[in-house]
Length: 248
Image (cartoon, rainbow, N blue to C red; front, side, top):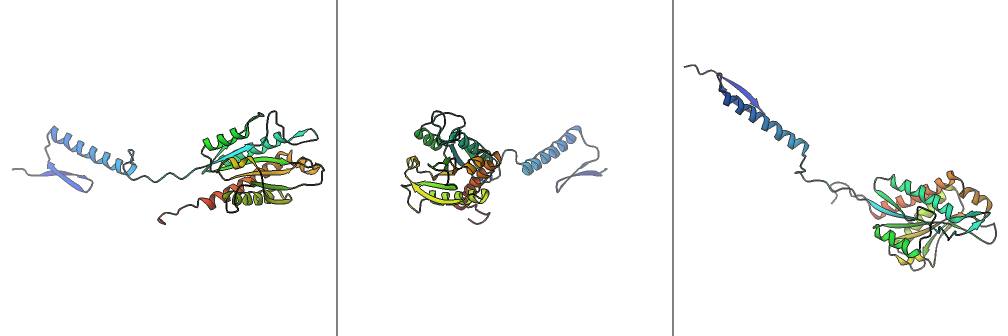
């Protein structure tokens, strides 16, 4: 009796069968091979996400507000309105924030329109913002004062995160622009209406001729926006340090 046989290797399993196979045997071998291939593909590519999936990286929402707007022009000098400068810088800052992989910028005022202070805060909180940044320019009765300062509302204790955020943004803007550093200080402000870390960035004096020219310059505006982003970036990295794999 002829007992010769052939074989086929499926993975690490060798299947032997008589030389003269029936059609059913051929189909069976083909099915086994197909199942093995499909199983291997499922293991490698995991299309149904059966394997444990890593947690998505955190994303932090930054509320960016252009101060004043619409019927509220803010400070004015030489036919220049504060509201326009604020809007330009806020737009640049929003674009920079959105370019960061772990940040989302929510611009509260995007048009020349009036928005109440209560509504500004409500929009930031509804967006789930971790930070609130409002952009302004300063003014004075004479043209001598100049420089950048960052304001924290007077209800915040010195250990409040707003002070950390304010110091970092102040340092960032001064470093990016070379402007006079007027420091970080507190005053009564509508920012007390939220518990979110919040600051008002006074980007320069509209009543100082040289500084007003800078504030109208798109290149200088971009430097201001970059400086604010630098401060935000430092705050986020400090407040929410990345956890390295295996450290928990």
